[in-house]
Amino acid sequence: MRTQGRRGRLLAAAVMVLALAAGCSSLPAGVDGRLVDGWPMPAEAEQTLPKAGDCHSYVYGEEARSDAVGDPVPCDGPHIRETVYVGRFTGAAAQLAEPPPLYTRATAEVAKAQSDAYLDCNAQASRYLGHPWYDPRLRLHVTLPVRTAWQAGVRWYRCDIEEIKYDSSTEMTGGQQIQRTASLRRDWPATLCVEMNIDGWPERPCTAKHSGEFVGAFLMPVRTTLPKGDKDFAPLHAVCELMISKYTGISLSKLAWGDGVSWQEGLDYWKSGRRVTECYVWSGEKSTFTKSVKKRA
Image (cartoon, rainbow, N blue to C red):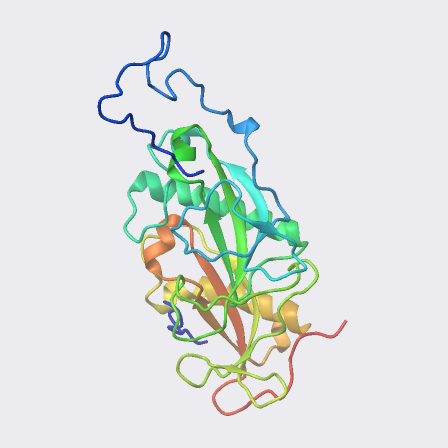
């Protein structure tokens, strides 16, 4: 078994301001000069809302707050992110004074709002795709409405997936984004093979010698600290071994390879729901693979 430290791993519109010129302070009868006084804010249902299947060409970070829709573009053209679901904040999260951003040191209320939304997005992303969404080169984002929209009563959150370049040194928010030209529903990333006997687990062609291959991932329950000892890691490795068995078609009793466990993000974001744990099959230190070990249909 092996753990690694990759990417934190272990093993509105414009507002037009009108001013009265000096000396022109008199107004017609019935006009008080307050341009928006008494105008009702548009109800959320009356606004243009994002929807699953939209793709987006603009680039923004995890903490950026997009406008209500942004610039949806066809998914068969250049784009950066794909919306897989649109949910709604309720309860205490909906009562927050502003949209709950993703912060490394978020308050308990903000972290819970993010965690609940991410948990929902996690399930809905896999439902949208028809299979688990996990891949080391994909990121699932909770996109929020702008603050002015939030203050007007908007409470949606958008679940977006983007593809990033595999890089053993990148943090969650720093990966180089890939411009895609097809929906993830019909164009899924290729099998990922890596060299697990080199620090950082660099990517390798699956047809070349390599010692590891990504087999799947799962979302861990909430924890306050990362596992530290063998006792903490044992349940994780057990899950990964089951994934390897299913991926390769080899029963656990006959499985001779080891496994590797990796975090998609680090501890800073765990309380905000980012607890995706990745599993890899490992050939060992003295042997290699020369092709994918995935079970053939």
